[in-house]
Image (cartoon, rainbow, N blue to C red; front, side, top):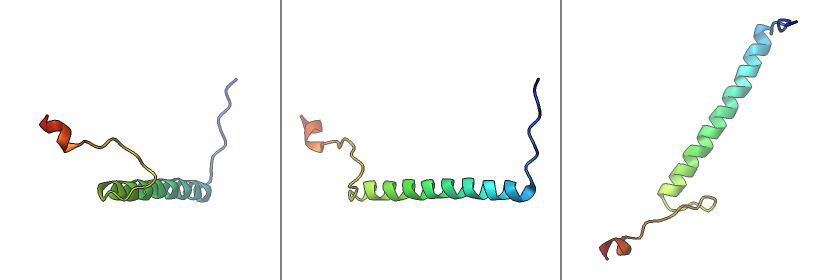
Length: 58
């Protein structure tokens, strides 16, 4: 038979949400940093195909 979960206190809920939001903030910061490095061609950890303009002329 299904049993309801125990209620989480407000303080524990707030701590849990703070940890979750901090993880999301860190991931967003890393993604933005990677995007900036890719745009300035300084990225060492991310490889992507580059279009050569010379091939388009042929």
